[in-house]
Length: 237
Image 1: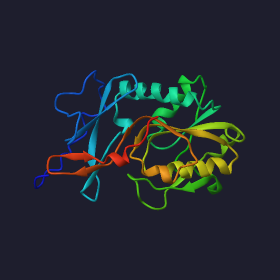
Image 2: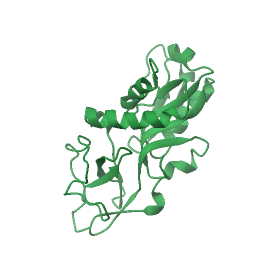
Image 3: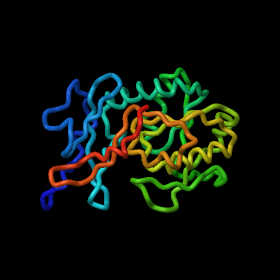
Image 4: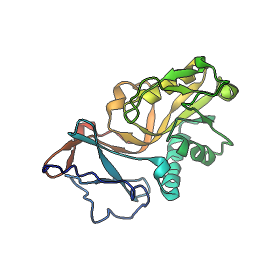
């Protein structure tokens, strides 16, 4: 790229629309500048902003579900429910924070009356035994723990569950959630996400079936924009 050009921009206008075709300012082929278009199973296009990683040489396509329009979230939840249905689970478990934007909608579409949310904040009645340490690509700080409200234990013990999150990237959150659920005796059928963000997570979650609506590769900096690294493209679903 030219000096000072990152080919990234403010994300205010992203995640708001689905279009029948790729908008004119974005390219269907590399190099990509600012946004990366993905095609959903319904055929509509969602353009994702490209975020430069701290190393400066790579970028990822991003989804921030709680900043997305109702249309985009609802459409992704429709497709996620289709994937979740094949797991034939009794209850959905939502992973924090952005997975909670989808979990209730997926559960509703499966005809389930409720879902079980995991969280990061510790209420005074929580039991530390019902927690697992976790980090993520966007929240790398140490000390964060994934937690379950003890009152929700009867909804999970001995039941077949599907975990729901917005994305899977490194797999650390998924692994922590799986450890927690297995510790309390839940039967994990699989995991459903809106986005598989590269395939970095696959080595650490090989035993966990993961399905997604779409997948995005890792991008390498070039003078003209961001080049997808094809070897990092995850398989879909």
